Amino acid sequence: MFESGFQNVGVFLVNSSQTGLVAAKVMQKNLFDQNEWGAAGILSQGEPIPFVVQFNAAKVFDQQVVILMDLDNIIKRKSVLSGGTIRAIAKQLLQGINMIHQRGLVHRDIKGENILLHNPIGSDRVIVKIADFGLVKFQDRLQQTMLMSAKGDPLNMAPELVIGDGKADSKVDVWSVGVVLFQLVGHEYPIKANSISNLRMLMQLQTINRPSSIQDNLLWDLLIHLLAFDRTKRFTAAEALQHPYFTNPQARNEIIPNNIPDSISNIQQDQIQKQQQKLNQKPEESEAQIPCENCMKMVFKKIKKIGRGRFGTVFSMQEISTQRMIAIKECDYDTDELRSMMNREIEVMKDIIRIIRQSTHQSQFIHVVEPLGFFVNEDDEKAYLVMELYSGGNLRSYIENLHKIGAKISAKKFWEFVSSIVSAVNQLHMHDIIHGDLKPENVLLTEDIKVKLADFGLSRKFLQGKEYMTNRSGTKFYLAPEIQKDEIDQILAAGKQNQKLPMKRVTQTKAVDIWAIGIILYELLAQHHPFIHSDDDLADISDIQIAHRIVTEEPSELPSHYPDSLKKLIKTMLSKDPSRRITAEEILSIPEVAANLRGQ
Image (cartoon, one colour):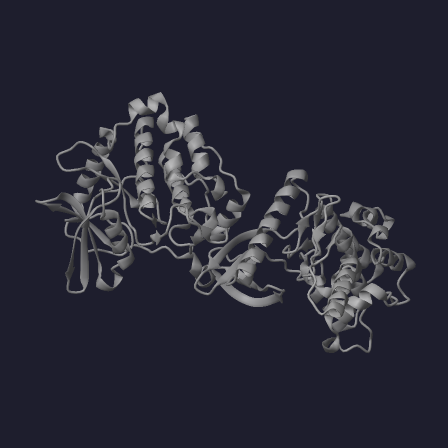
């Protein structure tokens, strides 16, 4: 007996007179995985599956369990394989996955270490064997979508488990097969990441580069479909087996059922001979993978709370491996509504970044907070959005600090803020994107006071003339009067009729963002809200009172020492009529703003 050494337990090669060479998986009794044994039982029912590891026997010795099963693993070794050999391995692997899925199971941990190559007794054939069912998930029907936790090796995990909402199906195995085949040919991962956060960031880009080692166009096309970031466009295992890579005339002549060329068998025997020097060694545990749901504790160190929004709390954290400071937004993820909100915010952020990058110069500053990753902790029903952290804090803290030290912002500094904030919003408006929830808390500042916009949960792509359901989820203090008026009318009408009326559709435009910026800039100058009076107790003011003031009253006068040019700008931004409100493009042409932009 000698050690083969993979996974979390001791694995030994055993030469039995009855079974020949097999693998003996040795573990402490308390580590025996009933889930894996149950999956093995399901897979052993009915017609045998030739491409799945067979569990030959199991026996308990005091506090240890020994399981005998089929043997050996060479996928991860850098062997130069012929095109026909690769095709045979790929087909058998997909056949095995397809059969597993047909039995109602999702493997969830397909990787090179779990793809064994078995040489039956008295045969020169080598057969692919899929092993390790410790993370298996049971599904009621083929391609059923369900919530899955992100477990296993992150580099082999599908995007929906790493950066998605955790809703997945058996196609997570197909992605992992694509990773294994990519490694088999190119000896590298399709996405080369050095940390979990780096992996999430690279997955957001949705790009896999073709290595020079993959010359076969049909193989590359198959890999593209196996590694589709959008799981709705990803092949099932059954669909992959119908790909021309397996069905063209050359492939049909090349692949012999259940057989891989002798070169593999020779490699296998070489590996066995080399390992016979390790006879009688004790089993040792290998380093276990860290499940993604433990990322908060194992990957990030929480520093402090830096903000709180409608749907979550933002913390500054340190990535332990790199010492890099980042921001993580922690949100409840326990209802369909909350999951939908979080998933939508991430999708919008990704879309905005993609749109802006495609149409701007590489050196141009992007005024949108970029997501670095996303993961879900099913046990705590929490979702975590990983983002850049900006040392300048947010505009709310900047305004509060001015008030605390009794300082006033200078006209020069004010125009710098106007230039930065409006440039940021204009970057969205140029691409017909409405932010929809601008407020000082969502205006983040870099160390050199450049603006980054955050919180895109209410953002939308604007289509000219299209009517949208009025979004009243934004903060009341910054919602434009055309939105507030509609809500007040609805409430009054519902009150008179003593019933709840359906929401009215109104045309929402980019002018809602300009109104919000006007409120923000007013606060920057006056250090209070334009519709909050000096004798007001904020605790006693209802949302309806604020809405009524915004709709019916004029904003309070700004301090007299500020130049008329500042007052005029804010007045044009706070016009009740959205059609008369100044645009972002027009603001950028104001001489003071243009001068600041030229100086940047």
